[in-house]
Amino acid sequence: MEYKPLGNTTVLIPEIGLGTWRYAGGVEPLRRGIELGAVLIDTAEMYRTEDVVGRAVQGLRAQVFIATKVSGSHLRYDDVLRAAERSLRQLDTDSIDLYQIHWPNPSVPITETMRAMETLVDRGLVKYIGVSNFSVAELRAAQAAMRHYPIVSNQVLYNLTHRDIERDLLPYCQQHRITILAYTPLDDGRLATPARFRRTRGMQVLEQVAAQVHKTPAQVALNWCTARACVVAIPKSDSVEHTEENCRASGWRLSPEQIHMLDTAFASTG
Ligand SMILES: NC(=O)c1ccc[n+]([C@@H]2O[C@H](COP(=O)([O-])OP(=O)(O)OC[C@H]3O[C@@H](n4cnc5c(N)ncnc54)[C@H](OP(=O)(O)O)[C@@H]3O)[C@@H](O)[C@H]2O)c1
Image 1 (cartoon, rainbow, N blue to C red):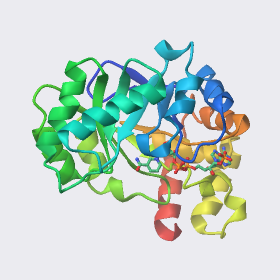
Image 2: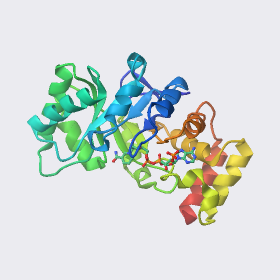
Image 3: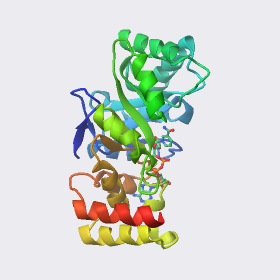
Image 4: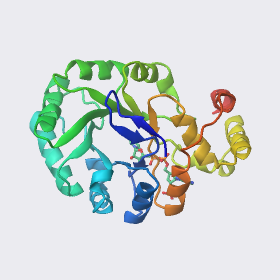
C-alpha cells in the first residue's frame, strides 16, 4: 500500500481507504482491509455504520485512521458538538481522526460551524477537520472561517465517468495541499464490472488497459484516481475478496500513456 500526506500535515494516509456507505459486510472485510494497509475507514453519522467500524477496529484502534462526518443538517454550533459526541459513542473511541462536514448548508453561517469544529479539536475529540461536497467557493469560505487549524481534506465524487472536479476543484486542492478523498471511485461498481454494461469506448479501453497491466478493471479505475496528486480513493465493499482486490490497486502505477488513453476514451464516450 502506498501512502500520501493528509493535507499539509505530516500524517500519512493510505491511497486506498475503506468506504462504508450502505456497508453490510460485518467486521471481516474491514479487518482484512486494515491488514492490507487500508487503514483509513470512512463513515458518517448518516450511514449508521459507525458501530460496525468501532467493532472492526477493536484492538487495532491505534493503527487505524477513522474519518466520520457530521450531517449538513447538524451544522449549528451545539448540534455539531452533540453529533460528535454521538459519533464517538457509536465508534466506541476517544477521538475522531478526521471530522468532515458531510455537505454544505447555506442556512448556517460557516463561521459558526467551524467554531464548533475547532472547539472539538481544542477539546482533543477531533484531530483534523475536513469537508465534503464543497465547491471551490465553499471551500474558500470555510478556509477563511478557520482561526487555528487548517482544512485538510474535501471528500467529493471522482471516478473515470465523473470528472467535474478536474475543472477547478482538483487544481485548487492540489495547489493548497488539501487531500481529495474520492468517493464512489468505482462508479457504484460499474467500473469494476464493465462487461455487464454498455460497450462504450471508455469501458472497452478500461478492459484493454486492465489486460495490458494484468490487473482487474476495478484496480485500474482506482489506480487512475490515485495517480492524481493529492487524491486517495475510498471504495466500499461488503466482501473480503473485493476488498483484497481493491487494496491491490495500490503499490504499482499506470503509465502516463495508459492514463492518457483512459482520459481520452472516457472523455469522448463516458
Ligand atoms: N461524502 C459523500 O457525500 C459520499 C457519497 C457517496 C459515497 N461516499 C463514500 O465513498 C464510499 C464509496 O462510494 P460508494 O459506496 O458510493 O461506491 P463505490 O465504492 O464506487 O462502489 C461500491 C459498489 O461497488 C462494488 N464493488 C466494490 N469493489 C468491487 C470489486 N472489486 N469488484 C466488483 N464490485 C465491487 C460494491 O459491491 P460489494 O459490496 O458487493 O463488493 C458496491 O456495490 C462510500 O462507501 C462512502 O464511504 C461519500
